[in-house]
Length: 355
Ligand code: HPA
Ligand SMILES: [Zn+2]
Image (cartoon, rainbow, N blue to C red; front, side, top):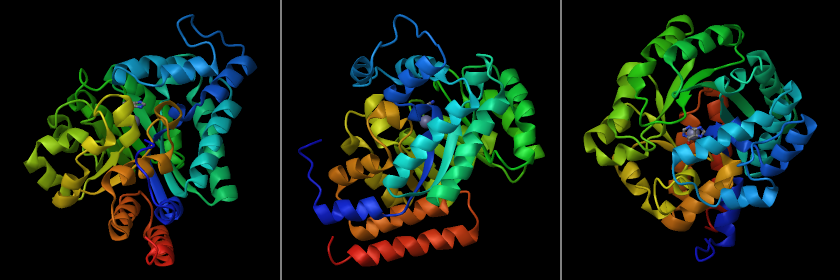
């Protein structure tokens, strides 16, 4: 990326610009450093084919063949998470890093099935993550929401059982959303109609989202809207292939949670410049810029903002629009939105004559 220079003031502006993140998997924030530390602390022996050092992990993360190649590694990586404190430490490390990138609000995914199937109770996972969320608000002033994701490679009956076990956390407001992730192409949205309707019926105030159109066809995006009633789309890259869908996304103000560096590492595109970002802007499709699995994909939220800036060279006004869209697409109340919008205006006014 060294050939893409960003002027210092623009860099500082993007650093300070208040950010909301809507697409980050807490298990994807597990750095090789913490991974080996936790493996030791918990006496976990990683399989022989797993990289045996931080350096070898970093080599492995240079490029993944596709989403599945990454997931095969990711599910092994998360096997070092055992105690409530592991989940708390993992999430809090992410909040600190992202806060240093200008993060103000984060809606974070987690994959309970990836832990429960290893014998870790869902309570251990959620209570650990929730402790980190409380600390992030108190110590860092970062507001947070937890979004439980279902793994689409598992049967929907398993998803329904997971929802059942998570009900106390939906009832007490610790979990705020439902998402859908893992291998996309073989597992279309229609498989999860029961899961989404179960949550919508019991907890109408809970936010619904789903990974769609990361690798699979645009129909996965419209089906997620029509069959699962989601109000935003994670990735949604493939929407650019269908102008009618783009018009719908704009009309209904469905936000796409884009993850530029992830798309390069998983070979969805060869370079960030290939992302149809101008097309989304022209159609009026709102999007936010996110890190997905930052420990694996070479960058946290600011790196993703900078990668976009280095390829698209957006004006200050365009960045303000992106930042405000990401506030408006957040599952937060009007007072918090107002606070964040005012903070964006303050930062823009500070830099507008310099950028
Ligand atoms: O990018 C992703 N796509 C699908 N599932 C995931 N689980 C973690 N990251 C991802
Ligand atoms: Zn994701």
